[in-house]
Length: 325
Image (cartoon, rainbow, N blue to C red; front, side, top):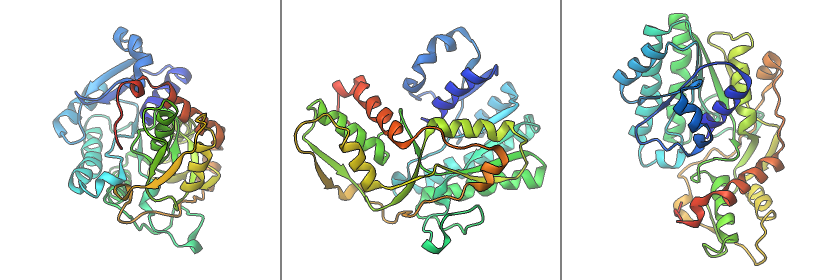
């Protein structure tokens, strides 16, 4: 999701040539509107590589010699990390090491964004809210642990090798193209399918009590661009997030109220969607990033939810199959 929106932003707002890393099996649905440009070689080149393959990472960086790097790639689904922790650690921690090692060899002067996560803070006591950059890490999943490793690896390369690596902890961001394994996108997809009478009017949920700070993915990628182009400071790290706080339960209610379905929609807890432990208070202090860049979110929560729901209403795959996630 995020990479595709970043591509949209860079095509519209820069004259850069953009290299996008993909694997041989990577779906291109989220960038299908750029396929003609890609086929023409017009400012976009897709490069086959994998974070778990150091040779491919070396080849990619040696051939592209980037000036700016947005490291967004990860095993990014917290729930699956409980079942696949080693894959998550390898992809996210060692993958970041492989990327930064390749950059050290072939593009040491590049300005690099390492995308950590607000999940590194995990279980935060109320007295430490809002969460600032110095809050103690207390990760609540193997995914969050992997992002602690990602976070520290980025800062290590800045301090040890003098590279311009900057780390972000982005709080919840969503919008169109969000994968259906994430709560708000799963809810939106289920509502769209209920409206099309593809499934019964029952929304399956996990933990609804978590409090989140919501922002739009399109605001997030604008923040990432500003991060690397407005006086980038090697080794710095920033919390980035919105200003709107809402529980997952209230977010679901907001989406349900937007449905055009005329019958009654029932909410049902699915035990398979419950994490063993959850980060339940995610409210950031973003003053550090704001003071440095003057960034602030522009897209309100209601617009984000509208666009997410309409994305699933318009998704043609809904007419063909139902993936039970």
